[in-house]
Image (cartoon, rainbow, N blue to C red; front, side, top):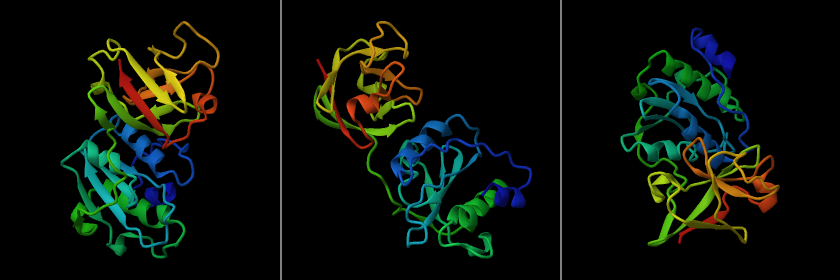
Length: 245
């Protein structure tokens, strides 16, 4: 994929965001793209390939959002990006003159997405890729479900390689500092109410899960020098409840 991009646009700078997305885990890929894109300048072209439907009837799309561009499969990978910017635009990629001459049915990342991303980096207009669409695939709302004045139902949207479990709870559910309201999290039959500022903040108790605000702006479940996912037997998609006391 990098070779194809550099063959078309040899002067672009290539930056790897992550290769840690679990195979076929579209939601995890969507999270990493959402978490990383704010660190990049306007005009950046993001190429994301988590594509279990490669070769099928799933569409290829280009998204314009937050002053940047996102290229990849239409399977929900850019759901959170679109939700973050109400003024986003989505185009179906149908202009085959931009693809490689021979397109593999099993490697659209190389033969479709990479050349299109390179042409975007060179300044091609989005309208040259294909028609604008509204019916792109969406993973559903990222926001937790409100079930009462003080109770919210959320989910684990990602588990990283350290075993930290990222929830979809954000600071706007808490006070301005995120520490003034007493709360209780319930997940996998366990109740948690300890919120730390950093992983090694005392008291440090081995295998004790706690909540922490992660760098992406979401509440995470972690443990010091260990895997909260393994201790609690949590996987991405698991439900979690937040209740303010």
